[in-house]
Length: 154
Image 1 (cartoon, rainbow, N blue to C red):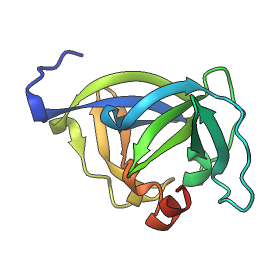
Image 2: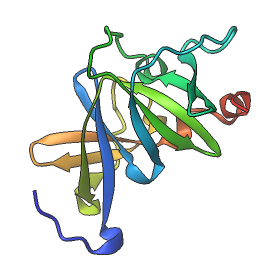
Image 3: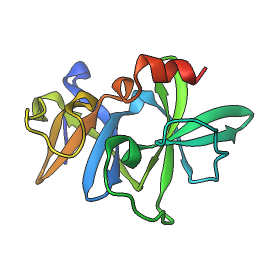
Image 4: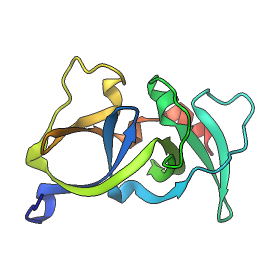
């Protein structure tokens, strides 16, 4: 798929899978993508927080997006990844089934989320991107954690 790069008329996304759906997040919020590593559990943390990892001397909380969104859980595979992202002022790892690609998407191919979106809360969704015959759910990473939850990450 070729697109003309004319500045702000497109966005660049990291695309990943959760279950049978594809999601996209802005590449500017992604610090890196790493293989799944064992995290250290934190007592009394929300159930969607898997724990913390030590990434080159930095302690980073890890969130399971399937648990956060209330999606059916599945076994981890060799394709399971942690996407290290910036959420607000925090660096957080999010567990996904697989990272599939990085792509540019024209803003004209993005529509607002339908009001009756099933599965995950519409609060987390910026829009739906149309890529050829596929639909990408574009996540609003800044809304994945409430201000109260972000304050717990300090």
